[in-house]
Image (tube, rainbow, N blue to C red; front, side):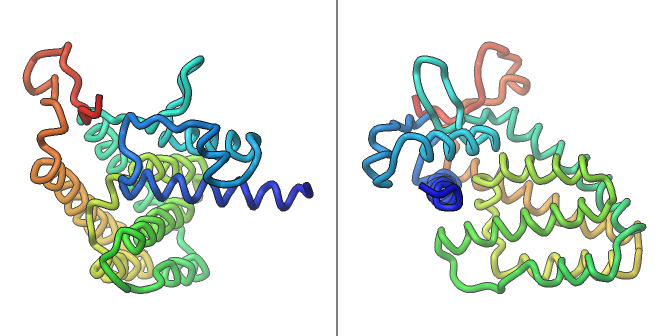
Length: 236
């Protein structure tokens, strides 16, 4: 099989499984079976394993030796830590970007969004991908490539939670405000615009968990003082 064909098959499998995880069709703790995936995708073991490895590198799958591949469980503490880290990284990135961004980079940011369509899971998967690309490009404009890579990787890990924000109809408008501040090299204004977006998305994620998934998440051990209790989806 020619190499380009192998790569295309691997990426098609990766994309379909990633979408299933992000849209919660595959649940935390769910096991993926190689033989079943071979049947589902009509392919050999190699592209399946390659796709699963890519997903594990994004933190969406956990590989357990002599056991298999599982959709990664994330504890409530881990989730809030990731949201805190997102703020730290992206606020640093946006301040640098506001000082350094070029007209061509502004143009790329303005083309990220394909526009609001519907409120389906598939549409929100696209909005989540566009949001990831937007914030990666902002971080790239900071001129710190490692910072940009860390922002992108964090968005990959947060993707299945970011989809809960359901801001498809408002995302472009929210990002246009930030673009306007970046275009004028307004460091303070860019920081304030991003802070507002970060707070809104964080509240939406945690509110969604409290309102619709509270019975599947254990209490946060740091808040209860019980360090033996995990704060994670109870899909055991």
